[in-house]
Figure 1 (cartoon, rainbow, N blue to C red):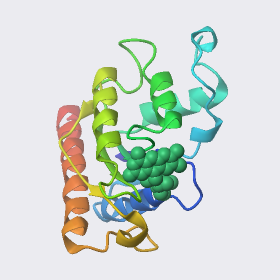
Figure 2 (figure 1 turned 90 degrees about the vertical axis):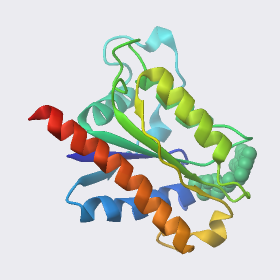
Figure 3 (figure 1 turned 45 degrees about the vertical axis):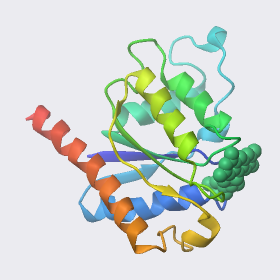
Figure 4 (figure 1 turned 45 degrees about the horizontal axis):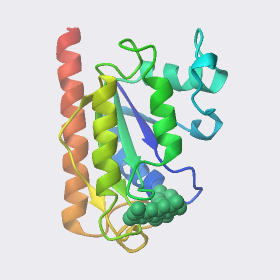
Length: 186
Ligand SMILES: Cc1cc2nc3c(=O)[nH]c(=O)nc-3n(C[C@H](O)[C@H](O)[C@H](O)COP(=O)(O)O)c2cc1C
């Protein structure tokens, strides 16, 4: 079983990428593999004219990574009250071909962090909406880390006990989706 993590931030010291790494510790402790997708920056702007066959190389890599994962864990910042453009763009590519994109029926959860007060709640809500539109199975899980520069430690662990628990709960929800996938495969 493999969970693919996708951070909505390209920044080297991204709070969201570090949050994914903290989630990875919990996932791996449960005997499930975890990888972070590192190719977001190479994905070109969506152009339907270029969306032929497997698509451009970077897009084919994204689609294959999603198709090869049993579940996805998104951690997103908020840009101007919404989903960062690079992440939305990647999802647009992954959503095609319509009705048969790699995201279809894929279990996903969304968490997020921002340096603002609210922990990217609007971006998370919009990301859940977008993912649902692609046919992904968006599970009910929540973690919004506000003031991330203060509320995450250098390894991405939430400093507040309640938020550490919320991270473990969110990951637990995703892993229970994996149990469902495994049960279906038997
Ligand atoms: C273009 C831009 C827009 C932003 N808009 C918001 C916003 O609407 N709400 C918010 O809480 N933070 C906003 N921020 C601050 C981000 O939360 C902060 O840069 C955060 O660290 C980004 O996540 P990262 O650490 O994973 O890169 C914005 C940052 C940028 C660069």
